[in-house]
Amino acid sequence: MTVRRLAPHSTTIFAEVSHLATRHDAINLGQGFPDTDGPASMIEAAARAMREGHNQYPPGAGVTDLRHAIAELELARTGLVRDRDSEVLVTVGATEAIAGAVVGLVENDDEVVVIEPFYDSYAATIAMAGAVRKSARVVLSDGRFRLDVDSLRAAFSPRARAVIVNTPHNPTGAVLPREDLEEIAALCLQFDAIAISDEVYENLTFDGVRHVSIATLPGMAERTLRISSAGKMLNCTGWKVGWVTGPAELIAGTRTAKQYMSFTGATPLQMGVAHALRNEQEWISTLRHSMQARRDQLAEILTGVGFDLVVGQGTYFLTADPRPLGVTDAASWCLELPGEIGVAAVPFAPFVEEFADEWSHLVRFAFCKRPEVLAEAGRRLQSLAR
Ligand SMILES: *Cc1c(COP(=O)(O)O)cnc(C)c1O
Image (cartoon, rainbow, N blue to C red; front, side, top):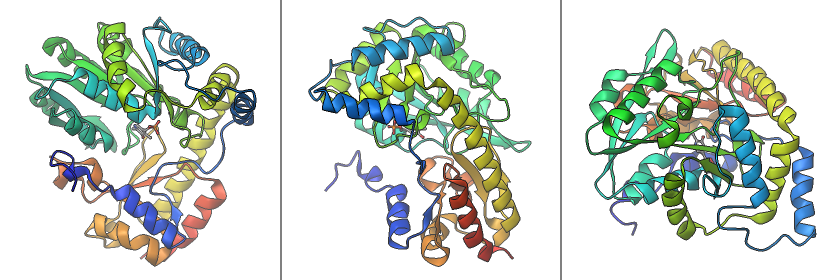
């Protein structure tokens, strides 16, 4: 009974794979969530907030202290000065920040450029706004995913209102280099479009690679909404505390939509995150090192089994090509895997639309799990080796 504009988005393969993983007691390397807690002091700060009576609605834009901590972090990370009252908005996860930005700032029939493969919520959100999705793509060159600049130029038109940028990139694990971001920025300036920049993995870059925000490129601070989330930064994906920073007029539109999506998020959880942003920066930077070690561990396992891999330099994810193992249909293979060997992974299919043919042979594995869990997944995967 879903409305036409959302019908194509009614089921997600993540839910299906996670359901199968639970049913078969499989190790879930499909959905990207960590299996260890964030900093203990963050959890204690949230619990204390609850006990101390911080259990009612926070201000519409989010707990003041958290907005303050976000504005300070923004200055430290990007050099951008954002006013904690008019230029910072706390949302129910990055998901709501993306939805609020698209619904609150894109008119019906305006175009929104996305880069395939893309995080699955983008397409659904664009459909909710009644906007038109235009796809560019990344290409694989020299073992790295890079932006296909020609496809990006082709996707922009005078009707383009926004481009959704995601770096470090889910599902590929790619960290877009500055040159790619410069291409996107140039088109934003040429067509007077805004950038909705999903940077939830901003802390998770490896091998010494640095994350660059498109908001820091010339002319872009005035036209970029920078989105992040405590979920990926602090191992608390279930808390759904996210935020968006940007110029006041873009935040105002986002806030108008957000106001009627959730009104506000959870006060004590926002207080816990504020505590962590102020006091747990070291924990946050250590996470990067442990995540890099897990990426290397899973890469070694998958290579040993016989997958072809594209090893990115960020996020929670590795891209694997299972064709060397005789797999011809990655999507149906992912549905069989949990039952057959007790490991779950997701195909690229839900991340692609227009360029589906180029990607549908690939599979995404999450490595944000404890080393012993990855090792057990490795033992189970071994039965696929030829
Ligand atoms: C996990 C994820 C999100 C959603 O973040 P929440 O804070 O859980 O809403 C958004 N974008 C990307 C690329 C993600 O991987």
